[in-house]
Structure formats: C-alpha cells, structure tokens
Length: 306
Image 1: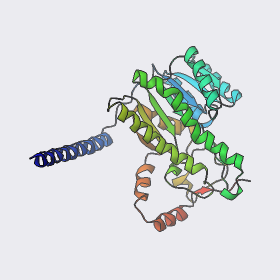
Image 2: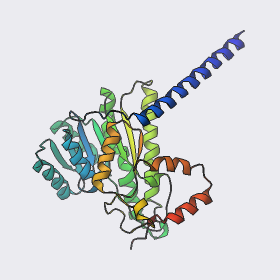
Image 3: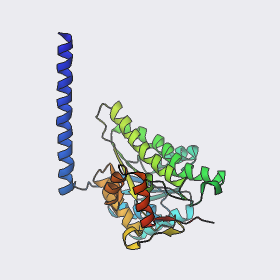
Image 4: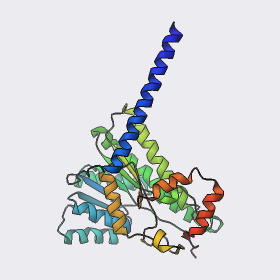
C-alpha cells in the first residue's frame, strides 16, 4: 500500500512539473511579443566598476541620466574623476568617484565601507571592469595571466562577497555581470580572456541558484549576465573580421544602453546585440567541424599583440 502511495505521489509531482514547464514556456513566448516594462532606477544606488572609460563610463552616464545615484569605481583615479565631472557638467550631481583596485580584496572591503558611509547601500552592482591580452598561451607571462584572471574573474568574488550580504538582509538588489560572447566559444589568442568570461557566466548561475535554494525561492535579488560581441573600447587591439557589416563592433554607448535595458527588464541573460544568444545556443548542438567551418568563414577574432 505504501509503495502505491509513493508511486501516486511521484506521478503527481511529475505532472505538476510538466504543467510548470509548459507555463514557463508560454511565459517566455509571451515576453518575446510583449516586452517586460522597464523598471525605474531613479531611487537606486548604482555602483559600476571600470567606470573610467569605455562601457563603464557610458553605463555611469546612462544610469545618471535616468536619475540614479551613481558610484564610479576605477583603479585609474584620473579617468574615473573625469567621468564623474563630465556627468556633473550634464546637471547630474548624484555622482561619486572612488579609486579602487577590484582585484585586491582588502581594498574592495575598505572602499565598500567608505561608500556605505558617504553614499548609502548599493542596490545595483555592475561588475564591468575587465582587461584582455590577445596572445598565444605559450607567449604569455605569468604576470599577464594572473592579472587578467584577477581583474576579469576574481574581482567578481570580492565584489559579491562585499555587497551581497546587505542585499540578502534587505532582500533587494540587482547584480549585473559583463561577460562576453566568447564565454560560449574559445578563440585563438583568447586562452586566458575567454575562460574568465565563461567562468563569470557559471558564477552568476551558481550564486543565483544558491540564493534561490537558501531562501526557499523567496529571494528578490535579480541577476543579469550580458554577453557583448565586439565593443569598440580598445580592449581588443587588433580585431579582425571578414564581414565588418555583420560582425563589426558597436560603440560603448550603444552597448551600455542595451546593458541598462537588460537590467531594467530583469533579463537573466542577454547578448549584445540580442540576436547572438540564440546562435550561441544553437552552436552547442552542432558538430565541432561545422562550428570551425563557420568560424573560419566569418574570420572573426584578433591578431596577436606584440
């Protein structure tokens, strides 16, 4: 009798699971045709790493224009202050700049306390800081490898450990991580850069699931991982592409605008441009030789730096 009861209970769970899967499929299809309303960020405190230039600078400008209080972090104090001053000249005064090496855990926690006292609790964290060196693996020094890994990946751990506790306590917040489309496909001269971007993807998934598990599904903290294609920030010194009109880069301003939209619409993942993500998913089921043929045809990559 007990076995029959357990079997019936398992069957009920399976049926319920099927219903939930069908519901969420319909929900996903619905959002394709009727986009989610963009939430306001006017009352948010947004912290952006790597705000001294490129995407980070444009993110700071974008959020400030939307009325958010913006906290700029960068290891380069001069360019970081320049970002702050440019935004103030636009008439937005809720902007702050702090010098911080995000790869240094002690420095991160020290500056976090300063931000908390002088500005308040950060509600939107944008882990954007990143560097890249296009070289063959055998030509990279130990210092180059360590530096890329520390800035591109390890810094995310320190930032999450520093800011998540307060978000968990208040059950409010949003974490945005800037990865790259090369998280889905390693490329020549990207033996260090590509793995760091891939690890960011999995880190965000794991942290999201961890909060969901420990809160028993009640966590309201959102996570968004964005995967830009080539953005013309100068991080790729010698980009190469056979069809620039198709695979050509986009401006940091355009990339920042799309990242902000992804955050405001609570996307879990978003490629930039948006059409790349379905292609990247499809690539996973194709044989490697087909992927290589397409890759060689497009000629997308970067020449080795000196």
